[in-house]
Length: 466
Image 1 (cartoon, rainbow, N blue to C red):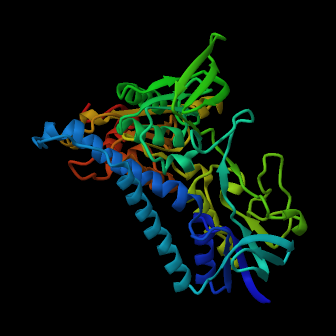
Image 2 (cartoon, rainbow, N blue to C red; image 1 turned 120 degrees about the vertical axis):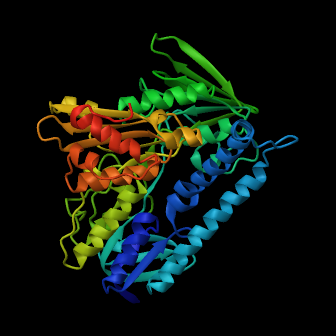
């Protein structure tokens, strides 16, 4: 039986990053993955493939709707070859997961293909291709999450589908009904709307992106409505039924009336649930709470002191980059270091176009906490760079403490916001004031100038270009 300093169960962004950092710190490391490819949900059926389809569909929309504005004329009909688009997506996935294989070899990490389950606190049984048993001084649970469902919905994975199936459809839906106006539903909804599908979003809460700043929700809602998506908020879904190639969704609106939506596909995107199936956690004395999460303390240590857990399977936001930070945190903790994670400074991003990104507190949270704050907001349409590219939707909003001017939250929607949010994270990590941001130089013309202008607006209502 092989023995390791640390074994990681699950090879998503949290698991494989934890493995690399453990190996870098001199630990003999093994990683166990039940699927034939490494990378978990994110690389295989989540972040990476969805971004590939978002990119491809964005190119199509640009060609059909905006190229002419730039003086680019394409004779004849521009067609979507969905099969080729899906194949390109898969090629991106294959290349990316292959990169993880390379990193495991480079760092001398032993990879086991199979389902890892605890025999006891120091022994892990592997069922599958690399069946057997290993011993581990420490173990990191990084088993991730799976799509959630509503109890009355029967997923047939053909017409009533999850995000996994939505990434490999054989045809563009005529009418895609999306249950859930969160990140996943909106991203995939935009993909298929661009490709010609009619799209209806049915959301239980009174706005899309209900956990983000209300201003972002309102602005993105306008963008989706402009694209002729139907946005049905404050609707409680009651039933989803398939009749042949038709799916019928019944929901109760805020007036208490039952309304009906008919489409050929229904995407159920109501969040994700922690995945611990087959882990046999109880054999190692690891506690799992009522929500299905592995219980951990502030050091990400479970109820069994030599077993840790990270990522979607523990409390907090289900984000790949949060899992990565936790993977590094645990590895460095095991090495005797004293790492730190500020969960308030883990950004959230929606990869629609315009992109949506945020870090820190929302206005709603600051009001609830009775924190006095000031707001600086700047529209993208006032930027030369935005007008040059035609990406004028959106704004940057900075929330700063009314007394100290410290930046408490940054919320943005617009072109390249997924990348721009890193500037806000950096500033907040060093506890910058709005004035600090306003006083360092931003290249012109760039989208990043919106951050400087919003900071000027928050400092003393002195934006230069608004």
